[in-house]
Length: 137
Image 1 (cartoon, rainbow, N blue to C red):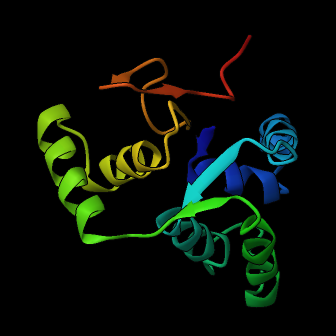
Image 2: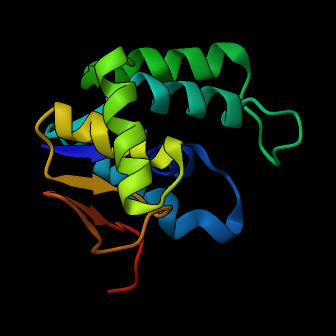
Image 3: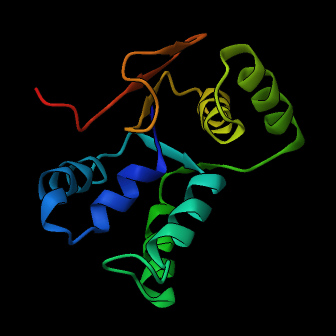
């Protein structure tokens, strides 16, 4: 199973011309079955996708409908154990708490890969590896 970071969801709904290729990659990924995400990712998606300053903001109803559809994937809740693990990972790897929470949510769900443009492609966080699905091939 692979863990999906927020940027994949945001590219999937983007109408920006400069993001067309990334949007196609993201939409293709989201048709696959072996994906997981977290409550944090869904929250970040909602906030960013509906943000008034966004070029192509979604309405509340549009964003909520998408989140509802993505609940077909396994979703990791934010728990005290996840918070503690993320704090340790943030300190150990010198990354932000929010990035560490993504890594630890993936670990809890048994994902060995995090699909993300925000973390370093190829970086391994003690068995959870980052893959940038948008890197040029």
